[in-house]
Structures are given as structure tokens and as C-alpha cells.
Image (tube, rainbow, N blue to C red):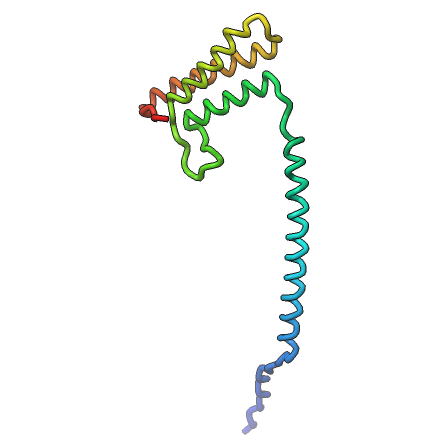
Length: 147
């Protein structure tokens, strides 16, 4: 009879101990702290710059910006989007929305004949859209919110 072949024993996994890992981790901690300090210093410099930059980023006052600002307030009051300064769902305040829409109406009445064609068209379109949105919101059964 033939003798069975002997199979080589599987290699046992070797455990490699890296004695230098502690010093490597310490070096990484020091490097991370240095980067954090540099980042903080850069942010402090950027905060000073950003305050100055923000003042220059404000768009110039214009009739278009006025219409946009009042329209945005009305849309927000109609619950179309939330106030970014508050982290809650959009709130419906029909009284405030109506007030903002009425303010645009006053502007339309008082500036009639004194606007350029595109300004007049912008105001007219904004009023139409906001009035339609107001009626749609009112028809949804949203109770008027108290201010």
C-alpha cells in the first residue's frame, strides 16, 4: 500500500507588534492640534474679513429689491417656507400675509405712472401671484394666525 502524502501544516498567523505605535499616535495628535490651531487662527481672520465682506455683499437699494423683500415676507407668512432663523416647520399667518400684500397694493397705487415698464410689470405680477397664493391658502382651511 502507498503511504498517504503528508500535507504541510498550515502556517500559523504571525503577530507583529509595532512598538512604535504609541509615538506614531502621539505625533498624529500633535499634528492634528497644530492644524486645528491654524484653522482657528484662519477663521478668526476670516470673521473679520467676512464682516467687512458682508457689508459689501448687500445689494443696492432699489425698487426691485423692495418688491422682492415684501413679497418674500408674504410668501413666508403664507407658509411656503420656514423662517431660516427658526428651526421649525413653516407657519401660516394670514393676517401678516394680507398686510404684506396690501403694502404692495399701496405701492402700486402710489407709484402708478411713475414706474418703468419692467418695474410696473414686476409689481403687478408679484401682486397677482401673491393674491392667488393667499386665496389658495385661505381655501385650504388654514385658520388665521395671531401675530
